[in-house]
Length: 413
RNA sequence: GGAAGGGUACCAAAGUGGUCAAAUGGGGCGGACUGUAAAUCCGUUGCGGAAGCUUCGUAGGUUCGAAUCCUACCCCUUCCA
Image (cartoon, rainbow, N blue to C red; front, side):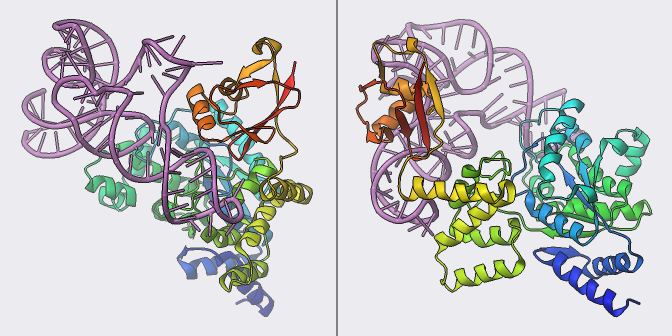
């Protein structure tokens, strides 16, 4: 039995940890684990698996990270599993190109940047870092066959994407079946108490429970968090889709990208990827629903918060100021990238407009450049240029703009 | 191993000897309107300042001319074994 104080602690932890979770499997077991941890004063081991092929973290990744942070603040331990072994095998998602294999050194290198970024959210003192090659690589073929024997094909085909592909008569490689097995085996090796992941991970997470039981290890509880949509508001945030906000990005970038998300997404972002106190988020949500707060202001606050989280208060203020002057007042930003031009590139001080914007790196090709000029997207010192044959008299500190966001300042050599 | 169908641009999908740098839709990009939101409207979407060049799985061939026909190869799917 718990003392009254312990009981209160349990309720508090449960309230915080279950907040925002889409599903907890099984709920009562998870609660019992927390209770036991409090009673025995023993932290829970909370596992999160990571894919080392994409070493840049975006705020989509921070959804589980924020949750882990909460675990840590309540005294629990985080087990980060870097899937270096898994990453060497291939691609489980059925996409056609095979993922390029990473060498061990690359993986370690990636992992380092990765971990550095992770610690912007997590507490290093309460984080263990593991590489799953540690226990997967030594397995013999017999071990692997035994592992495969713990599961049937029918069970495998329960997994959503396998099922779909199977029904659609699309190919499924045998090795893809090993992905969930390997991930599940990680939980066996680490004796994890809890594993967290996105809703898309449900099958893999459950596999961990299944295998732990098979191998006689206490089963982990599962805590599933929502996936977050990217800047387009439709697709899951991912690097390959380019709809992400990276936590290592420039303050102005983060601020700007945050401002461009659809309104409907704001609440989700507030709830899942900010570190604001629960009560404050609630106020915001209510304000928006009752239209007491202008969506634009709410979004600016969101943008501000995100910059503050990863670059600090000062940077957030500056980014906000920058946004106001550049986009709300239409002024020029004060940090325009300076591009140096060599004298040889100028013929008598004049350069063809299309060539100029290509040289400055504002557009990738002449064709694209021509289009931009034709469409009135090009400005020189604030003056629109839509004459395709225009020859520019290059001057020192001339500012060239393409579209709303791309600027360059010319420096003559 | 056998038989059949298929591989077209960022994606989906037309095109089956010239008028095809390749319809249409989605996505992207730019402009207008706004709040760098949504919705809407307009434009644009291989490279090249032009002549032209390269592109329809890969390599050859037929032809004045090929995404389209022929040959070989690679890959995917289905059915049979």
